[in-house]
Length: 114
Image (tube, rainbow, N blue to C red):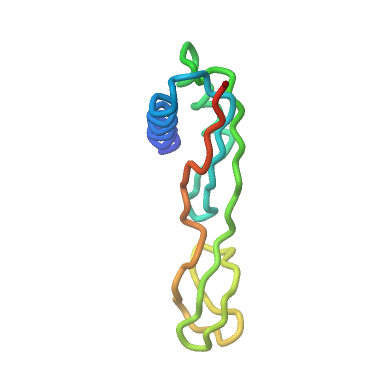
């Protein structure tokens, strides 16, 4: 259910960008979501459609880039993909590490009507 609050914050951001750039209709937005954010894209899209209804965001396309989780091992220095709920280096089996990507939740672009 956290997708609703995330989507509301996203809509607020898009609206701020729209107003700061002349107030035109929004044609498309681009967002990046890390796999560790545990956001279900289909739910986010459904909420976006609902929240955009009746506004200048209605009908805009939402492009979502999924960012895979990667980590850096503090022991052997390997950078590796993280596919589980825990971080374990595949080379030296050291637990933990520093997450480098996968927690992104960024609005990276807004396309406005001329």
